[in-house]
Image 1 (spheres, helix red, strand yellow):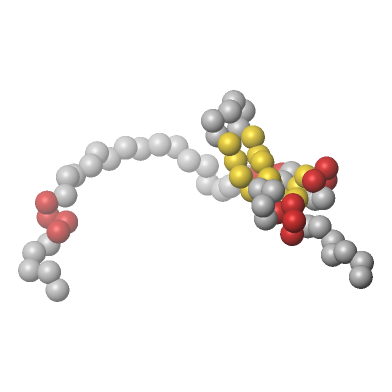
Image 2: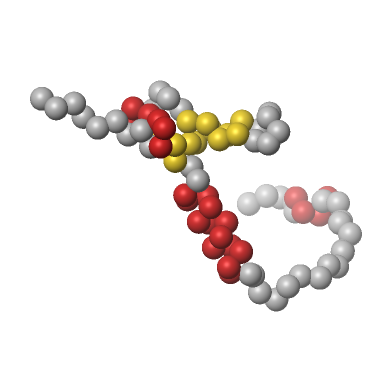
Length: 79
């Protein structure tokens, strides 16, 4: 147990008000979820999963990691 209250020295903030909708637009949220789940695959690279995002380009670019993703999606050789 602390011998003092650490919150007693915190800075008091300002109260602001804003208008918010009562409910979420579920169709918008579902559209974002479907977009995120379906646009991360690269069929030209054996359906590798795009996982790395380059935010230094405008617009940001989704890239695959060839070391892991492309090799995990390769079928095993016939023996």
